Length: 261
Ligand code: HPA
Image (cartoon, rainbow, N blue to C red; front, top):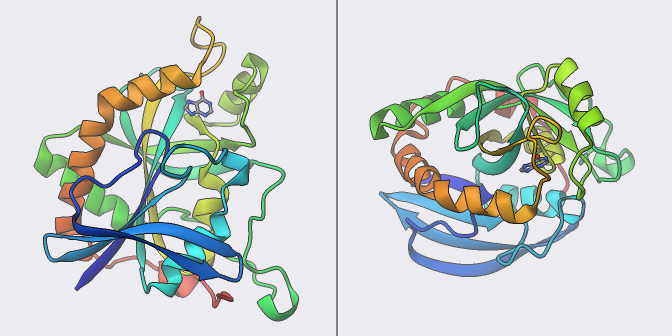
């Protein structure tokens, strides 16, 4: 049976398409993860709410290592994540769905590797192509089939949060090449690759970033725009399950290493 995990970000707290869903937890050496397991169109689908079912975990406190290690323990090899992001690019207005292609890492307080030395090993993982090109192709083809507009090629900058950015920071990130900004993709994408998993992120632009938007930013506004657009994300997620695994042209597995569970 095909197997896939969905990590839901802000505004995506459930995988609505799942049949026979049950909630359970997996314990790893990094802590435990709460998941939902169900089936959809002959595929086994795991769902994990990154911030908890009631958005109670801030971005810098998410136990990213436990989440990824739990999925490895469950023999999941592919993850599609969602993320609410601010936009720095006039061509990506609020309501736009976009696939991430590269990242800039401005986080500072997170456990961001499985390879901590000693028994865990010292491994320097390749990040030339941080997001799985095969999964990205599957998402683009699912979007086309569903008649959904999905842009691609975004550079994501990950900030530490939980505060939003200053306009000066946004100006700097824009000069560095960022298209969208969020607080959670690093270290999630990093840990997934270290573990040799295929990982892609569907980002939803919920606002123009600080200083680009004339308004002040609030989490409520992010939630509101997510709510207006979760229908599109859910349709895309349901459609991609059909296509996932039909294109295995990626090197995610060989680029990853053996992690301690
Ligand atoms: N900044 C950081 N994270 C975000 C934003 C933003 O403007 N919007 C949604 N998530």
